[in-house]
Amino acid sequence: HDVEEPHVTSVVAEGGEYRQVACVGADADGGEMLSISLSDGSTLAVDAYVFACGPWLGYFFADLLGPLITTSRQEVYYFGTPARVTEFDDGTLPVWADNGGRFWYGIPGAERRGFKMADDQHGTTVDPTTQDRQLSAAGIRRAREYLELRFPGMRGAPLIEGRVCQYENSPDGHFIIDRHPRAANAWIVGGGSGHGYKHGPALGEYTAGLILDDGATEAMFSLARFA
Image 1 (cartoon, rainbow, N blue to C red):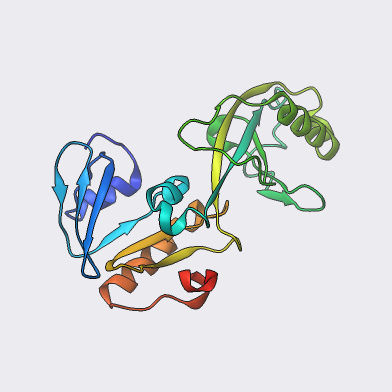
Image 2 (tube, rainbow, N blue to C red):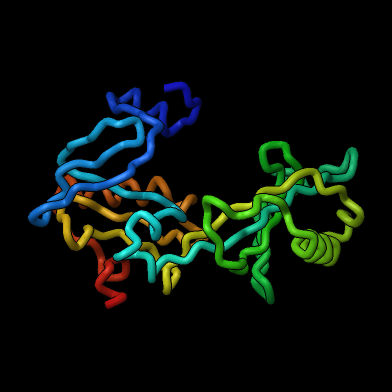
């Protein structure tokens, strides 16, 4: 592997294998997943499978999750802070959120990219593979109006860069962590609804416990709640 990422490094250090390939098909028979087909032409047969596909989850299991997962377009903005002003740096300004109207949030000193802020209100429904990755003029305008309202010292700040991301939203905003109904050894983990990434380590630990102990998920995470 050549990905310098802490989670990957930790897995490899513990004896795990990292492969950057796509799953292109799954073979389930008799209530069990037997193997999955990979984009490099190989197959993988293991005791248990975890599908944590993010916004592509509804596409991979279209018959099961297509009606449940909606992918929304979300814009993130990075504004430059004034020269020699430290009040917007991490260590001075905390992570903040404002849900008084539209839900805005921000993270100071975000990897030295500037003042990070984002609109948490769900955007338009998109295909995560083909959606436009350019910031919208309307989104930039809303962000700047809010920034200058709540942080007057940032008035006229330059837009340094931006990101177009996506949420994979479940109908109730809660996670989906459950066995595939037609394959008891295959687990579906998703429905992040905008808060999945920061719960990643806890979700991984929870899912690993379910698999190792042959456990049952909690009702609030189950697929049965949508029946």
